[in-house]
Image (cartoon, rainbow, N blue to C red; front, side, top):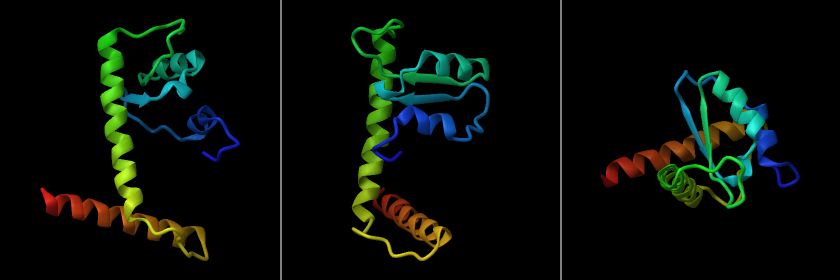
Length: 115
């Protein structure tokens, strides 16, 4: 999301076509009990890291699970960002998305070849 928007606004605008039983891992910025309850009603579990003064603290093992899951995602994004140039010249939104997808595929192939 742009810096002027709270991350939770971005989550609320995303079309979450997730199967029942899915789990979303998030950082503490996504702590919104109303949204958690709404997603829970749809069978989706939002596991947001909790601050120390949380009204709904997680068990320590859940906090650990959230931490390691988020770290893997953040490392992956960081690795993908290394492949991106400083600027991407595109005339249309579709052109930008095609270039972005190509960079992500390049990252994926590179990771597969290194295994």
